[in-house]
Image (cartoon, rainbow over all chains, first blue to last red; front, top):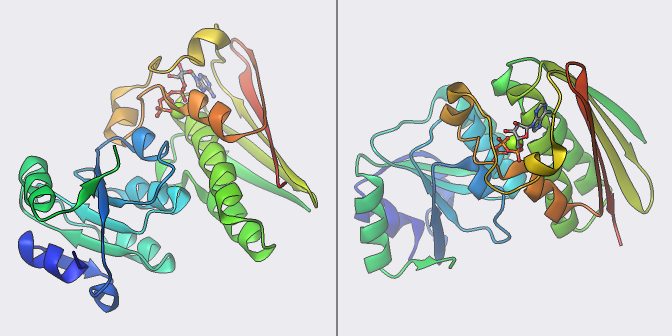
Amino acid sequence: MTLREIVETLNATVYLGQARLDEEVTTAFASDLMSDVLTLKDTPMLITGLCNVQTIRTCDMATLDIVVFVRNKKPTADMVELAEDNDMVLIATSYSMFKTCGLLFDAGIQPLY
Amino acid sequence: MHQEYTVIEGDFTNAGTASSSVKKTLKQLGVAPQIVKRVVVALYEAEVNAIAHAYGGKVLVDIEADKIHMVVADKGPGIPDIAQAMQEGYSTARPEVRDMGFGAGMGLPNMQKNVDVLNVTSEVGVGTTVEMIVNFV
Ligand SMILES: Nc1ncnc2c1ncn2[C@@H]1O[C@H](COP(=O)(O)OP(=O)(O)OP(=O)(O)O)[C@@H](O)[C@H]1O
Ligand SMILES: [Mg+2]
């Protein structure tokens, strides 16, 4: 599934990374816990309701570069600026975590485990 | 190459400054990406701990040809029982820390998994020092 299709499926807004929307996404991981994100060996798309600078920092350290914010959380200017340095994609949807995961799972996005 | 950083008490927005900078340096030096990830994840966990559980401190980094040596030394309450703190799931994190997405009790076990050498020393009422080494080969 391409990022563009993900944005359409989630009726989402792109905050950063317009130029990368034709990239394919195969796996995703959903968590509000950055501790969990830091234990990942792979680099899936992150689906999270935690929307602060620490989310971006954690992704930087864990080398994740695509984030979907759920529950109508919107990234701040600080977050976008930091994410820009790392060429990240930031997307936000008003859908809940459950609905977001359900729709993407249905559309073929794979879990890590 | 020697680098030093200061970790400021309660300053969550700057947690990761040292790790970010080390990441850039190691990339420039051409260290393998999987190794860079292990280094920065471990250092970041230690940095966050110095902010979340202590009153800030210092990060000392020495990069050699074949390894990186990192020390995160904080002033803080110390860890009364290090073996207990090393267990997955053990956490005394405050609500503010949990609100930042931390406090699952995964940090120290995750450092252990990512580094080749981990030494945690602590004195109650004084502070904690986390020493980590990652070999590049
Ligand atoms: N620098 C420190 N100073 C004082 N106590 C610490 C320090 N580092 C860790 N601890 C103690 O050890 C516990 C476990 O630390 P660990 O990093 O494994 O988990 P956490 O920080 O609570 O949560 P997580 O790392 O998953 O976000 C902490 O909750 C705290 O009680
Ligand atoms: Mg921790």
